[in-house]
Length: 511
Ligand SMILES: Nc1ncnc2c1ncn2[C@@H]1O[C@H](COP(=O)(O)OP(=O)(O)O)[C@@H](O)[C@H]1O
Ligand SMILES: [Mg+2]
Ligand SMILES: [Zn+2]
Image (tube, rainbow, N blue to C red; front, top):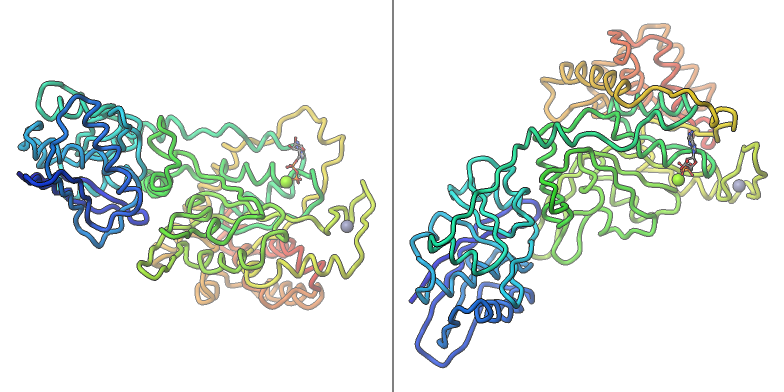
């Protein structure tokens, strides 16, 4: 007596078909699970036998061998409970075998036979459809997440009894239906808005430029000046997620088990703000079986590193490559995984360790070597990837108490979208380049040509203001975006002038 049930496992953000083969033999009763299962799969033996008995089915008093194939895909988690239970029931003729062949089954079992949610349902359903499966049976909590995928019927279940009755055609279950495009258009609104921020015209403008050209930003200012408030609102002026972007980001949340059960899609751009005590693995992904880190959870959104100099140097180092590539590869002895990690970086820092250097509110208590040391923590490779550096001074009380509303996110985002369209057209033949910030040196020479007046201005800036040579390319990229915001083909002196202003650190500290 043998049965075969189909299930699925995720590796990184991709899913693979798993065959659960069950063999029953008249021999000394035993229950063995093979196929490189980790501890969790072994524990599932206990849950499966209890769930079968407590659901009033017969647990065969035979030698039961379950094989999860292929053996070389590492399986973690508890989602094989349900397929193993169904395999045993099918091999012992308690489930009609015929009904299993075009169906993927997954779910964790409780001892009483009820079914609990599992991780990674979105990539699993996408892959099930690709493999030609017609049906997927899974926990009720995961149903909307799976139903995003069109062309495969998703059957939500909440107990082992329900699954058996459904497979034996004694119970009808309606497939779960949702419309991805509807979800995206309904839930894309944010609860916060740029108009909440009083004053700070300079910082808001800089963030608009950043959103328009995909430039990373560093904000420099005393505590309470509104840096966190501003950063949180950056996603609200970025273009809406496309369905494709939303699916990519949702997959990452799906395999991380971070997708709320009533939410099928990540429909707004993520904002992630990890604390500075975070580990390398927490930030870029890792641990024994690699799972996505904060930089991947920020995919297609914003990663905010508050108080940048407080982060461990090694943590900032490991971010360098992902910032360059838009993805991160994690290598372990047994496998190497790549997670997407394309995000806008916003970092903040105080102007000195005490926070009040140059402030009119409070006196700074730091000595110059201490300040120097503080800044040296953020110099180097990471700073090299940040095109825009701005000072965010505290807003005077008079401005804070102003009643009139400033521009809202919707209005700003219209300009951002328009500017992004110009870039899409500009880079349509350049593979992997989507925004001005992505330009290589070669592309900068091609698309950021200056006239003699511009050349002259930049030369003066570099020498007189003591700007570093590496600031040169950054200024050109940012001025390209500022020109695009005005739909200006040419980069004019005023565009360059504004871009030069966005080099606070080069000007003040490293000069
Ligand atoms: N420009 C502003 N407009 C409105 N409220 C502000 C502004 N700046 C600061 N605040 C208020 O001060 C609080 C602290 O700001 P926050 O963004 O946390 O400062 P920072 O991150 O620079 O320390 C905010 O929650 C907000 O209530
Ligand atoms: Mg803050
Ligand atoms: Zn200080």
